Length: 284
Length: 340
Image (cartoon, rainbow over all chains, first blue to last red; front, side, top):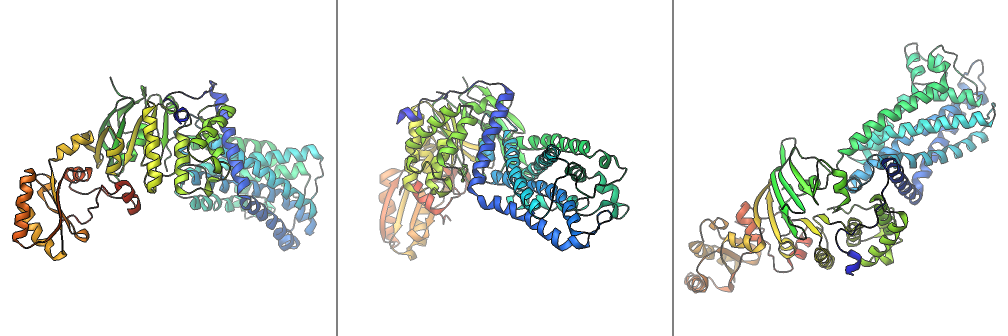
């Protein structure tokens, strides 16, 4: 028995490694932990899937006939137009998952445990956002299949379509860092879930996602065009060859791929910095 | 030479509350310090500061020879923390939890896995090792949490109310583990609301209240400081309590336990600090007899840490759940809810 509890200080084979290796290694350990959790709470993943599928069906069949995209009022055209918006909205909803997960870890005292360990400072949050990225990928795959079933098609070849999906994943990853900050800032997981969702509605609706942004009131148009979310939607429409690409002169609409990349990287940098700083002083 | 845990002048305020108001601590290597105090006394805040979770507003601390504020990351390599709330991931199995913690202590995956297996065996969790911790009982979770804190056999351990809410059997088991750890040379800082626990496990005790250390010493020293014996009387009928109290008050020693007679109505037990020993006992019996107070039991006893606490703070220790309290008391510590 004594051999197990051992003599104090008999440190069990710690591996000396540099800061970067430690950071990557610890993040992967935490990512794995979150993926195991997700696999044990499959209903979370399933609800995450049902919601965007519901949006596809509702928007396609409820709004489809009354929306004008370009010169067309065909529901089929709207469905193709819609998909980029739904894809983008779906990836940003990962924010709520990241926020709730981290708030839950705080609440349960796990963040205290992690903060008392000699692990890389950002790893708990990076691991969580990486796990969310895996979940988002899975969701996108299922959603793309549903989209194909309702008539959505890609017209510019597979490489460009993959590029579009990469931009979507990057956007989702960026937004999960916003979720991380929310999760660290609220008192309960429930607050993180609603706090992670509420502001997403204006962000995703005051955009080009569901309507042609040129149809918005004049003062809202620039907001929609400079919305980080719109840049990714526009980029996806271009890369998928879907209808409804905005012809606005606004820079993000003219260079949507660059705009999408820049926005996402900027969000990651800003929110990662803020979140890691917050994490360092976080207590349950 | 400063001990394995050494703190000077720790101050930490949260808004208007001074959670720590100038705390000094010193725990020699290989010993156990019991940080004893009621809820909100600042015990947990002290542990959080020493385990690098929060920075104090002022003061300094050294753990395992390493400056806590200057080199927190190195401190984390040398400590284990077991909290008040079992901090394990309930969706992970016991084995996955321990392996993860090992890896985050920078062990290689293989070594972490092997260590997890050893600890699961030692803490009687081997049968449940591959079940999610969600399915564990409270006692099992607590053992898992403690095992997580012991993954690297840290030279310095912090345990924040490790037995709060545990049943007597689990508590006893945890006490055995703690003794084994200390025998192996671990330095331990333990917080507890249970006087009996501090009495049983700690070499030294610091009594904290309102963020300050109000007394320190060994259990015996603290008891001696509180004064000599107490006379304890159990009267036969509740109606006799008032008369008996008047009698005992005459023998009450001013200044100790505020010289007051404490009364436990439901057990009809009265206690008063005295000096004078057995001779005095005879007088008390005679006086009680004179007022017609029939007694079931009378005796002289040494002060318990309960008495120490009462005399130092002027109030009894706040208690966790009743169940826990009984377990800690083991029949020896008596409840004094109705102190008058």
